[in-house]
Length: 300
Image (tube, rainbow, N blue to C red; front, side, top):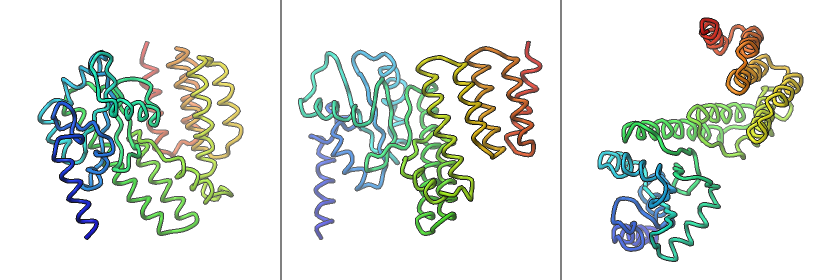
């Protein structure tokens, strides 16, 4: 009975258009707590648009091309509660909303606008985007892709929770791979569980994620310093620390990308791609590497 009464109260608040809906009276809400309540009640996820509505050119463009379009609002509204978190420079906001938004920008680590976060009803992020060219259809295609990956990934996680040991680790690893394909954000706790469950590296998963973490640190540092030579040296150190041919193959591929895209060194890039191809020749990745090598060799 109490749950039913709560649901009715939340429904009334959402439908009232007062504090729950945005000041414009559109389908976009501005009250984050009310949006979470609505998402929970309706079994939906949330789409959070961090925007600078009266000064950010790309924010204005995104709203005009996508977020204000009736077709997008209708389709997106089926699966998402839409939330606009605005940071205007000239437009006045209620003090409560302004304070809320200042907290949320820190909570979610937003450093640029527009930033679009896709979350579950509890506000946990599983995808992050910015301006996407191509209008409503392209943006909906992106949302459908990440939602599909979320559903598949979460299903694997649910299966994993019913198992133990290495079987659980393997299912969680599959979930991570599925979600990573759509560049979804992965809960660090899941990675921690995998490493703990495979603490002796029997399934090769502990090494896999330690390499990923090592790569992440190297690439982050390289992004800050621009020191490609140090990055290549650090990657060589990482290669020496792993036994798996598949992992070594991937690291050589990363080296090739740095040479080709960062250093503009085609010869070094090709050399690393060829090494990567030879290390694990029977993988699907090796076939893709072979195609890349042929394409690069035909380019002037």
